[in-house]
Structure formats: C-alpha cells, structure tokens
Length: 349
Image 1: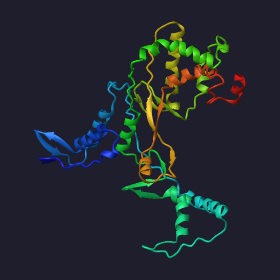
Image 2: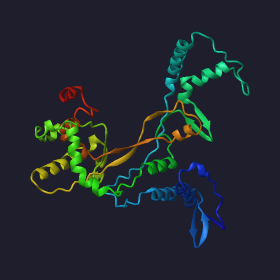
Image 3: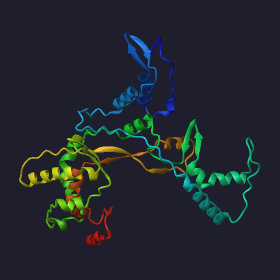
Image 4: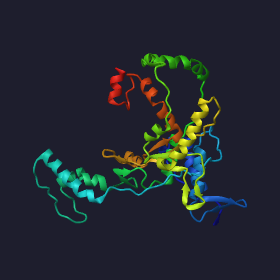
C-alpha cells in the first residue's frame, strides 16, 4: 500500500458516455478500485481491486425499487467467461468455398500476389481478394481504436468486468414505476382483456376445454438436457460423498424434486388449500456465435461486447406452462401463430 497526497489524474471523454451520471459513475468506480482511505489518508491498492470496483458499479446501476434480500439458495449465479474460437480445421474448407464463390462471381483469373515481404505495397487486386476472403473474416483480428476486434465471435469469450457491468446496466429496469395513469389502466384492464379475447375470436372456445393434470405426461414433455434454472433448496452431499443434491444445472438433475413440489402445489389448490409457491428465476449471458461482417470503426468495437441475456424460469413455471399449453394455443386465435404447429393452424381456421 502507498500513502498519497492526491490521486492520479483520470481521463475521460464526455462524448463516450450517454449521460453525466454514466460519466461520473465511470470516474468514481475507477477511484474506489485504485484507492482507499486509512486513518484519513489516501492509500493506493497494490493492484486494482476488482471486487470493490464491481460492487460500486452494481450498486450504482441498481434500480431504486430493488431491495437487496438474503439469497434463498447457495447458487451465486456468477457470469463466467469462456474461451471459444472457430476451429482451425475448418479454415481450408472456408478457403475452398471462397475460391469457388469467387470463380462464379468473376470467372477464372490468376491472383497477382506481388512481391512478398515486409513494408511492401501489395497489388490492389490481391488486397481486394484478401479483404473478401471468408477465412480472414472468421479467424483474423482487426486492430481498431486500440482494440483487437473479431468479426466472428462467441459472445462469452473473454468477457471482462466492463462488459458485465454494461449488460447489467442495460437490462436493469425500475419495475415498480406506475406513472400518473396507472389507476385508470388497472380499472380498465378487465374490459381490455375481454376485448382482446373477442378480437382473437376466442369466445367460441369458452368452457370447451377440460383441465387435465397428469404428472407423467408433464415429465415426458420436458427436454432434460436443457438448463433447469434454480430450485429453492440447498445443494451439497447427503451422507455419502458420492451422492449429491443440486439446486441448479440441467433439468435432468432437478426434475424429480421439481415435480414433487409441483404435485403438492396442484393438489393443495384442487383441495382449496393455501400453498406458497416460491419460484426463482435466473438470468444468464447467452453463449452464441455473432457475426459482424459489415461493421467498421467504433461500431465494430461496440459489437465486441454485444451479448444477450436470457431469463430461465423455475421448473415450476415450466410445468404450469405445459398444463395450460392447450388453452394458450387457442387463446392466440388466428392472429398470433408464432410457435404453432401446422395442425393447429388447421384447427384455428
């Protein structure tokens, strides 16, 4: 640690931040990551304190409506960075496809590679071909504004704290905002709901569907290899180190505990008893390939931190969705056909 009189200058460009709040947040976060107070003296960390830096930014970007509560499970839901790149074995295939595509576009011709070596200006025809070559776009990095950029990238590869904070701030919303017309909207909501149902031509199906509950049938509809989110239970070993209980992971590990809780939930509802449902959702950064083949300059730099977050609901919500799946399909009528099977389209007509 180092005792300082003043902190070092911090440089920021106002134009790079959408609001003054974002600018000040960036400055203060760097200050708390580098310095701390000890006995009324400014001291500098021996290395950048990433933990304090992230905690400051998370708190700064958290909506005022959000109240921190004690976690219900031991799952930390920490974003994890990966190391995924295009396989080099595919490069020859890309080059072969490119050359075939080029011949079809411009016909047979010989590429003049010019004189090879450092500090040599290559022929324009060669530079044009290399700029178009598929493998260069897929595998090579481009140096733009001090940043190495990839045009084909896996979204979670080498994600850093700044990318996490950027995503966190973009998806964080004040969910308790009501506005001046909330009471009026709340009063009109039943009538609006009925109007939507009539517009979707759902009236003809009213009271024609029977509620069916079959746990075995529900289990048969679940894709066990996909993510199951989080269950409100503790994880760990039970009596035997080889036997463990998981509260997060793929559905195959969680399905039995979830269906047992859901069965209790349904039976108590059918018996007219109260039951407290505690579903927990989890948000993950979606790992997927993204392609930025036309972007240039700052836009290409910004694309390097582009990613999507997706919400994984509790398995209890999945079971509820499957139970009311038939009714939901009819509710959409002939207007909303997203995800509808061809035989359902015939039923709706």
